[in-house]
Image (cartoon, rainbow, N blue to C red; front, side, top):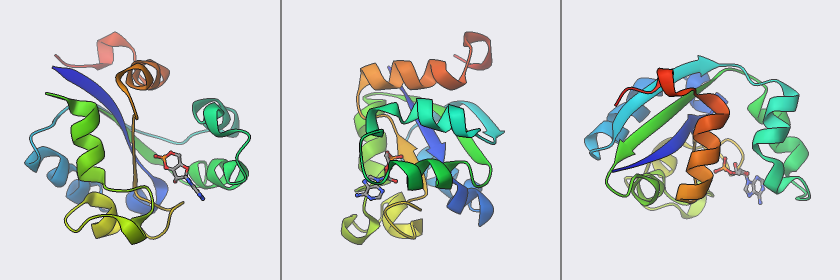
Length: 138
Ligand code: CMP
């Protein structure tokens, strides 16, 4: 069993499709073991995405992720990190595969509806960034 951190981003939460995204996650066999609606501050978004701070898109990414509420979740399942990345689809929805969350819902590479941890190590850091042990149901 593995856990991964998922974010349902502002474009999806504001279009009221959290339930549709959750249905795709659950249909793929991943279990939602923690979930909450939050609004990131600029400092929190900058820290969460610190690995991208030198990238040209960093400012726009932080501005976007703080623009409206997001849903943060912990997903659990076998190979949860890789499985979730598979059902999310490519970062750029223009090249994402049919049937993936991003192909179905994303609006652009920035407004790409969901985030998922890129490795088990990132998952551990990202889960503890948002959740304490007591908030995660085993
Ligand atoms: P996410 O999985 O949240 O991780 C970093 C985010 O940066 C990514 O999704 C995209 O939304 C965004 N991103 C990655 N590459 C680019 C890019 N070339 N231009 C704009 N945004 C990008």
